[in-house]
Amino acid sequence: MRVLLAEDDDGVAGALTEALYDNGHVPARVRRGEDVLARHRQADLLLLDLGLPDLDGLEVLRKLRAVSALPVVVLTARGDERSVVRGLRLGADDYLVKPVRLAELLARIEAVTRRVTTPAAPAARTVRVADVEVDLDARRVTVGGAEVRLTTKEFEVLAALAARAGTAVSRQQLMDEVWGDAFLAVSRSLDVHLTQVRAKLGRPEVLTTIRGFGYRFGD
Image (tube, rainbow, N blue to C red):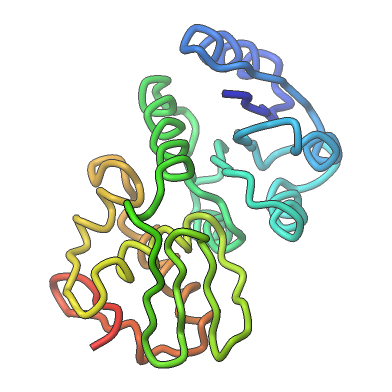
C-alpha cells in the first residue's frame, strides 16, 4: 500500500518510513501541508502529523476532505480532547497520540485499510428509513433525494447500523466492525462520528441511542 507520510521531524519520519517498508508498504515522506494537498492522489492512505511548518494539520485535513475521501490516520503529539474531537469531526479515520508503539500504529493502518477495501455488505442492496436511503454497495447516502456527503468512517458507522436496520447494535459490535478491533478503538470516536452522521442527515429520529447498550437505525 502507498502511504503518504506527512512529518517534518527527520528522526520520527526515518523510523516510520523504515517500519512501513519492513511491513510491505511503500512510504513517501513529505514535510509540508501543501505537499500533502499536491500529492494525495498518489497515495492509498495518509499518515498525518498536525505540527507541519506551513499549514496546521487540521487545516490540511479540512482542505483534503473537501476534495478526497483518502483514508487518513492522524499521528501527532496533540493529545488534548479538543484536538482529538476536531480531527475526527474533520474526517480523520483514526487519531493516535505520540509516542505510539509501532505495532499498534501498523494495526491501526491495517484496520483502516480493511474498512476501505471490504464491502459493507456481501450483496448490493439499499436500506431506506423514512426519506433516508443508504446504498450499501455504492456507498451512497441520500436524504429526501439529495445526496449527503459522509467521510469514509462516517459511512462505515452508518452502514454497520443500516445493514441491521431495526435491530439494536451494541457499541462493542460497532467498534469491532468499524475500527477493526474494539480493543484498538477509542470509545469517544464512535460518539463523535455518530454525532456527525446525525447532523449531516438532519434526521435525528432515524438513529436511536439505546442507553447502556448501543444504537439502532430505524424502528
